[in-house]
Amino acid sequence: MPLLGVNIDHVATVRQARRTIEPDPVHAAVLAEMGGADGITVHLREDRRHIQDRDVRLLRQMIRVKLNLEMAVSQEIVDFALDVLPDMATLVPEKREEVTTEGGLDVAGQQGRVQECVHQLQQSGIACSLFIDPNVRQVAASADIGVEAVELHTGAYADATTSAAANAEFDRIVEASQFAVSRGLILNMGHGLTYRNVRKIAAIDGVNELNIGHSIISHAVMVGLERAVREMKALLT
Ligand code: PXP
Image 1 (cartoon, rainbow, N blue to C red):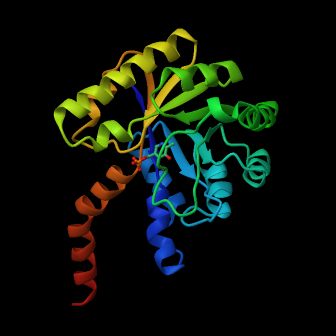
Image 2: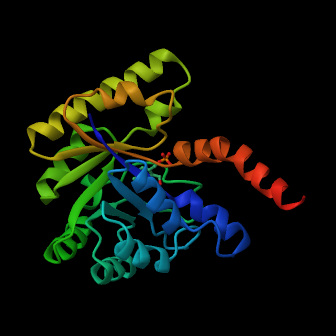
């Protein structure tokens, strides 16, 4: 059974919609931990659209499970990571205008730059993962850099609109997985995974951890809304 890393970015998205203090992603992380999360993942984006520096610093103090910091290949964020010391750093591509991380990191096309960043992080004891498309060339480039893990991007599989397309994407994930395991890499996966599509991915041989955010936070709103309304209503009497 793979481990579950819960991405709590979108708790912060709701907070930042009002620039207020609730809902607090640190509180959410503690609840996720109580629910059995094996790790907490946050993406400190360069534009700070959801998670803030303060969140990561407090998470580092509060949670007992693994803290995985998603980050761009950027010296500003590397310096922050070296100060906060998450358990793992996952390097992702980042474009300011995107709604979410759109594709995997092109490790093969910028090996030197990625390696320099990984080297700094590893020297401080931070394990490194690279978020890449499920593609043997990108896995090979990642292994050559000497990272501990790769996270295969499952977005194309999740977004496929026909079963033929989903099956083709699934086959790419399996091929890249087998190659990653053969190169001794820890095999993680994530992006776009939902209650509907996760089982097939969870059953892939060698998968260590799945990182899931949007679907869990969406479901949490739905399973919690009725109680929240009832509690507000009780105050009106
Ligand atoms: N893994 C990585 C590297 C991501 O960038 C994200 C999105 O922030 C996720 C996993 C989680 O994706 P989702 O929110 O679609 O579950």
